[in-house]
Amino acid sequence: MLRRKIMGRLIEWKNNRDKVALLVKGARQVGKTTSIREFGKAYYDSFVEINFERSPIAREAFEANLDARTIILNLSAMGYGPFREGRTLIFFDEIQSCPNARTAIKFLVEDGRFDYIESGSLLGINYRDVASYPVGFEEQLSMFPLDFEEFLWARGMTQDVIDVARDAYHTLRPLPDVVHGQLMKSYREYMICGGMPAVVNAFLSGDDFSKALRVQNIILGNYRDDIAKYAGKEKNRAKAVFDAIPGQLGKKSKRFIIAALEKGAGSRQYEQATMWLSEAGIAYHCFNVSALDKPLSLSEKRNLYKLYMLDTGLLCAMTMGGIQSAILMGDIRINEGAVAENVVAAELAKRGIPLFYYDKKTRMELDFVFADNGGLSVLEVKSGREYRRHAALDNAHADHPGRLRRRIVLCQDNVQVADDKTVYLPLYMAMFLC
Image (cartoon, rainbow, N blue to C red; front, side):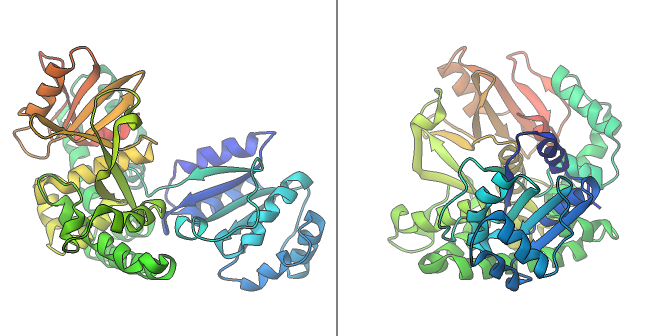
């Protein structure tokens, strides 16, 4: 069983005396059902799981009155239970397939006898009509693929080693070379394996990337099927955008160019398709900002953006170029460093850090800009050995003296601090950014 950070969040929710229902959201196959099931069986006397896609008959329990006693009685008659007051967690899985159940959450929470967790893919939750949302009776929690720290846990890395790395991040002192080398090796594995639980389990079953690749291709096929199922009129454009992400990230600028998809097409024609992928959790938007000022959203240009994949392992599988072997052997510069940059983007997104980049064509392009303890910090991802050459970062510092809290370069080498206070961190230390 993979150790997931969400377990701590679930325990916190359970211990809250004033808790409401919890909606766990996320893209398909990131591990929502498995984590909730493990939590429910470990922390409740009775765990009742109702999957509305696997058992569509359960929807009938919500077709008449939506008061709590009627619903529980209906579910009991269908064979669900036991329902023990104060000791039962009721789990509504694939909640998007039963909009009435989502509406009924308000009345079930008000009843107060049982605890409730809902779950479903963002594909369905965002695109199914609900008569009345349970505002004030539902807390939402996002779940993602495994981050790098969770991957290290899965690989058997001890917490002591991770804590040493975390201390090096905070103190800006180099790690022992052996530790740094092992973490970089694991990081390269993570770049091509990614964090989808089924893929990680396939890899762990024998350190065989061919098994992991087969699972990745199955997931990609499922995502394409979901696009066809849920994207409606935008399905063709959404699929075109989805399939174009690796090629667009492989360019030097990495900015997503709509005209490359369809001659003469503009951003407005594909706006709904790209937003659909983002809202479905399949891709992350990284919007351009025109000024290094807080708040960054005020200078956001929504027609200029990069589009990163939810999971970097899936990105590697989509390239069809056999790049996995090259990365594993240490060449992470491949595809203009797109894979390394995608890992960092995904790590930031998992930590709730909005993705922005700064581009001033005549002077600089900064990979990431983010709010940082009351200030702004800039971050460059350098996959090659010439990571000390960063004109854009230098120009940003010269143009905005005293305004930037940290200037960070993520690279393959150990922790260093330059005379001008530029901080060089190993790529894997993106897991500590917050």
